[in-house]
Length: 428
Image (cartoon, rainbow, N blue to C red; front, top):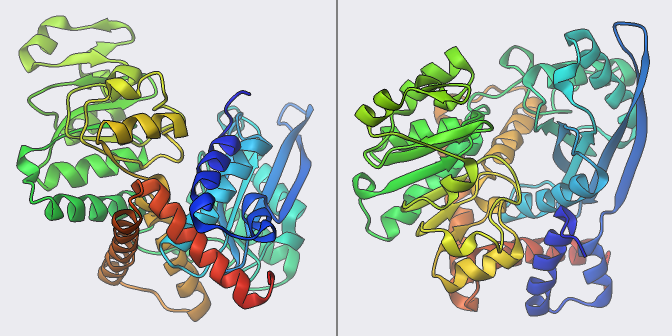
């Protein structure tokens, strides 16, 4: 059977549930979403033609609080992918101990082919389609792949029109001018950075002696590169969708970002398309690498911060990093996990390491409900506290139960969801 995002989730879930020994009824509630809402969104294009896009909202589990999860616009955002991401969100909110459940939404389309007017119309149509299933006490959406603070603002505005209400807590990831939170744009990378610092401190390692490779130079990967560079780590490789560069001596992400802004590519300082200035690369000690090669480079810390399913049984054996911090969702397959564990590579799993985004989303929801505006310092210190508490709970479980960090993170989250379901009387 072909591996899919949802089958990969279920594979890890099954392995962990063997240890938790839930009842058949509990197992069923933890294995499938509570609600799957789907429809088709019709759009009149600027040229007058009509198109339809499949749209989904999957609500996985709300035992611990309102459903929570992003909405992505992507050609691959099919039901299987959205289901897997909703399941991971339920675990992510539980592992960091914030009072939310898990959901995910998606429209299966390429938003880059739409005009601004078309994008706004699709975004508002999504809210109209699922308005009865969403709300600040029911299901709180957020940005995800290809959705921005502006999309969140259109959606909030549409929800308020449809419900004739004032609802700043309906959606998170909004612009600051329309109920957003300070620190939301860098939260995912910031949360991952706090975890990595804790891990390195506990191992008594010196950041100045550690080499890092980051796959993905978007909002999360790019922000993480800056945090690590400023903290004294040596960034040896960076990439985007078009490929990347490697230098054993280290790369300055500030310089790379400047050229990426100018040329649209991480390799822009050295290459125009496939034509590269070999002389300049030699002088700077830089080589061009593919995204696949980046994963296998000699480094201490590998950070997949782009796509899912990139570390598989085919390449896991060639990975040289000592630590993998997953900032992307689902970058490692269960088969690869087993190989990495045998090699003694410590993987800090996505549901823990990239939970900074949903944590600050929670802070934004709290601010929306209370009418307060938190300072950047308060957001930062609360985020650090939540992330380190979660890390300690996972680390403790991993050591006590002799589990990988991924299985330990699943176990911590599942136990919390089970406790909430039992408290509610959903299960005997």
